[in-house]
Image (tube, rainbow, N blue to C red; front, side, top):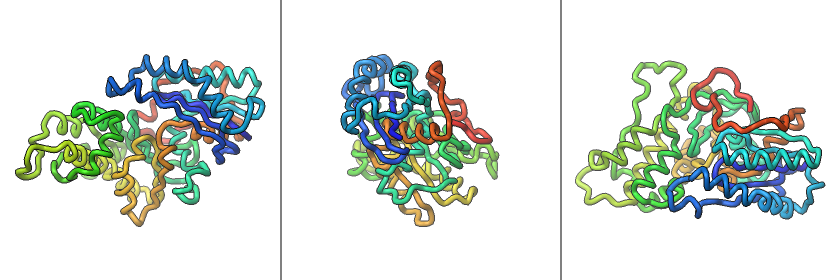
Length: 354
C-alpha cells in the first residue's frame, strides 16, 4: 500500500510517499527558514501563506520522486494536530481534497506520535532493528518536551512534560537574545562545538521539593529558570574568574544544562519503569550533545531517527497513517485541525490515542 503523507504543522511544507508503512519512496521537505530568519522565529501568517503557495508543488514532487502518478496512491494521511492552526489547515484540507477526488481512504494523525514512529521506517538504518514495544519515548521540539511510555504506535502514557517552556523553545529564545542565528537549536549546537561547557554553571530546576516527589510529577521538566539565568543573570553563574564570556562558551554551557535537565528526568523514568529502550523524536533529537550523552549509557538502548527524519516530515506521517488505515481506521472529511493536544500538556494516566 502506497500512502501519501502530508505534513504542515509549522514552517516545513512536506510530502512523502511510503510503502507498507516502512519503505520511503520519496520524502520532500520545503523549508521556510529564509522567510522567518529575519524575525528569529516562525511568523504564523507567513508560514500559512507559504504552505498555500507551495503545497501542490511539494506533493507533486513527492509523487514524481516516487515514480508514481495520483493513481498509484492507495491512501492519504495528513497531520491534524498539534501545531499552528493556519498551517495545519492548509495541509489537512489539501490531503482531504486529494483523498476525496481519488475516493481514497483518509486518516488524520497526530504529528507528535508520528515523531515516535520515525524510527520504525526502513531508512532508520542507523538505529538497527526497529525498536519493539514497549519503550520510553523522548519527544523534544520547539513546542513539546515529553517523556512517555509507548505501548503501541498510537498508545502512549505521558509520564512527564514541561511545566513552562519546551526545550526547543528555550534554545530558540537564548539564540535570539544573543544573536546566535536561526534556527536556534542548530546555531547553538554548532557554536557549542568550540565552547567550554563548564564556563558557566547554570542551575538545574528544583521541581521536586518533596522526597520522594509526588508520583504524578516525578518526571516533569522546566526550562523557564534556565532561560532566565542565561539571558538575565549570566555573570552570576560564571565559573571562576574567566574573562569576558565568549559566545561559544555561553552556547556550550547552556546546551549542557538544557540536556542534563532532560536526562535527569529521563533516566529516573528508565530506572523506575524498568524499560531499557529509549526512542527519541522531534527536532531537538538532532542535537549532537544529547546524542553523545545518551550513547554513554551502555545499559540503555537509545534509538534516534536519521537527522533527516528528526524534524517535521511527511514520511513519518505516511508511516503512522498506514498503521492506522490497515487497522481499519478512517477520518471523516469533516475532521478539522487542533493547535494543541491536551494530554501532551500535562501528565495523564492511561493511553493517549492518536
